[in-house]
Length: 257
Ligand code: MG
Image 1 (cartoon, rainbow, N blue to C red):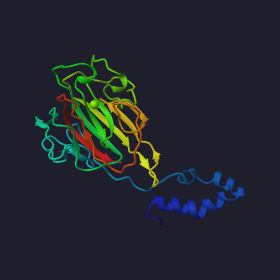
Image 2: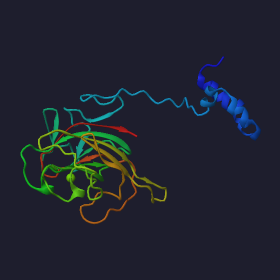
Image 3: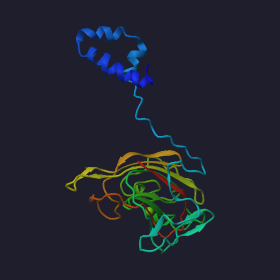
Image 4: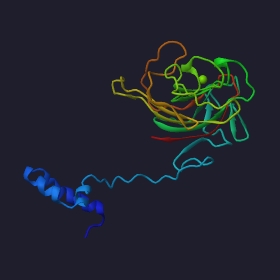
């Protein structure tokens, strides 16, 4: 009689249940209905979530946009103009110090981002000068990349900090020369038609599978000096930082949210 149980639930709700619950006297009738009918009132059968094939260690999820898969810099350009100048070695993308930041040719808003990174096995420098790079969502909001193993620095600037804004909940760092992962949920800021901030950006970050930023609110674009202030913008490219250290990246992909 019914094409699906959802059709039955909708009919039940609109024809049978809704009129009943509108009358106080019918509450008793509802309570006497079979449990499967009462349970159906709170069941949703649509919209049906899109099917996505989950990823593996080697393969991104089926709906991911791959920014670096091991062999091509086609998704990237130099922030100084022209092609990205970083090196590709053994499926890895390696910062070429002095060539500048690289940026995606496409723009993004809210995303789920996966990236793997490795600071140099040969430890050079201290504090912010040891294995520094960074992932800038929208080219403006930095999740710090740093060698934070036995490397004291200001804690809102260590690995997996939201630079100068949020200290990570724990230090989940692996050592220099080891591959590490970031899984980031970034919600882009929203601006009203008047240009005023309607909703600040937020970050949730897992570092090597450990929650290190739990839905933290971003105060504005990352600043090295002074306090951040939002300026209205739409979607923007993602940027990787050249901070003078040959940090390596691999398996960079994102999903639009
Ligand atoms: Mg940095």
